[in-house]
Image (cartoon, rainbow, N blue to C red):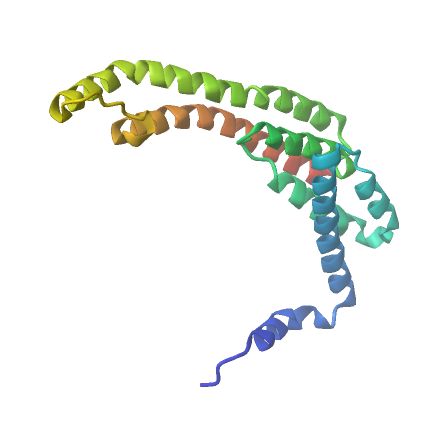
Length: 200
């Protein structure tokens, strides 16, 4: 049996669209939309610019390829809707919020996104508060463990809570409750974005 090269496999996969010029153009427009959306996100996160790059590229696209271009932009922007890990991630969410109106012309969705951003902006503060509350709740158990270890070792022992498997399990369980609450907001705004985009 002959082993196929990567090129042969790629050519086989593109065979159905090879003869269809319109399909190729739609595919390229979609890929271009993704590329432009990524360029926009990179520039906006560092310089906080407005989405001119998307608007200008959209105007340059032939009318019959605009929807495919928008789909590429949309897919890229929506893929960046995630729970923030740091304050910098809020800049990405701001950028997504600035970019989506270029491809979703729906004032109700824009309003919903603003509300979503207000709610999600509390996530990192809540993470800090949850962490403090979890540590306080576990403090007496940790002190007990430190005392037991100190007696056995014959000197004062301090335990980093994140080195204690019991604390880590307790921490994850409680943090997952918080993450679940905010992840539901992410899932909801993604769904609203999908509905608004496909309604056009």
